[in-house]
Image (tube, rainbow, N blue to C red; front, side):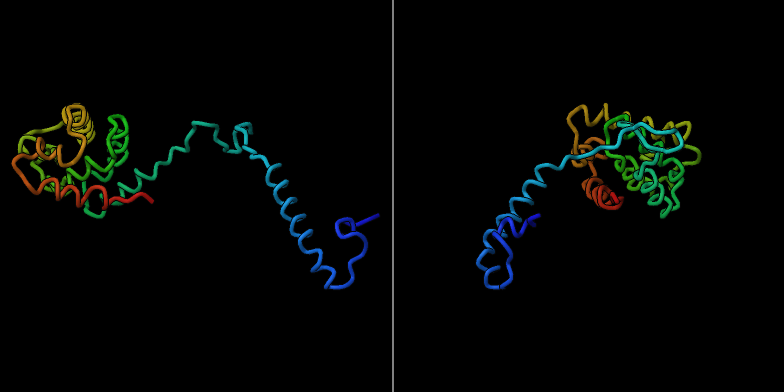
Length: 190
């Protein structure tokens, strides 16, 4: 039986100078072999077929963990914010309204130090009506502010922080600058 090297180089190669002489053939063989191997590889995907205890998720399924919720909760806890336990509400309302999940918390940071400086039981961390507006709960305030940002600002031609600022906090010239400090840099994606 003839080995691959013997086949390529014709007989036995015993002398190093003969090997150098045939190096071009060897390099061509290695290159062609590598190319053929690469062309023959296929991607293999795991199927979502398993025993329920295996925990494999099918396409479109999620584990239920959202890093944004934990990221936001941890960030708000640094400020002892009463909004920290509502991080999931902030993220889900942002998703429902097509907002960045950091926008509403950033507004609360500018307007009330993340909900710490508000009138008693108003749940108004967003400076609505100069703080004279009251919501029924934190989830209610998060929902209403998120929906209003979408329908009253973004859908009406104010898709940036600078444009939102002109309507949200006129005549302030620093509101959008302060908001930009908090949003998007302070809450980072992992």
